[in-house]
Amino acid sequence: MFASTEPARLRAFVGGFFVWTSGIHVGIVAAGPDFYRGFADGAVVPGVRRAWHDVFLAAPVPCGLALAAGELALGLMLLRGGMAARVGWCGVIAFHVLLVLFGWGFLVWSAPALAFLIPAAVGDWRRLGGRAPRAGA
Image (cartoon, rainbow, N blue to C red):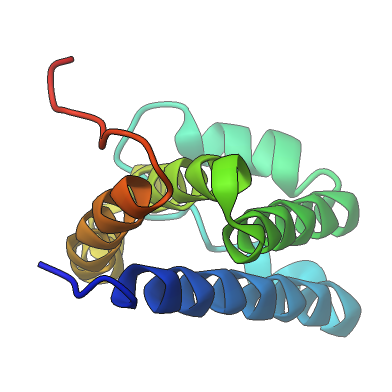
């Protein structure tokens, strides 16, 4: 699906995007973490809303900074390449799958993002020298 140089460009784009979004979370924490308050209100999976309030909102500054650090780490792994990029691809895909736990409305973002991320990851995985993961394997 992707030309031979395109996977590296896509990886750099996604890595840069995650580095940028980590900065967004630092900004949210600096501006006032109340922005996070209603994030899990639409959660459909039992316990997610309660866990969000009991864990994340109990300490929104360190949790917001941990979220920023996680996004930064994923972005930097993608930018680094090699085995780190493989871990980064798995992480950004898992991140988008897990967003749906917070409500069906997140499918509006996650479904198109995954439609982009999965083929990009598979194409880059092959370029990084290994076999692409297969469904059911």
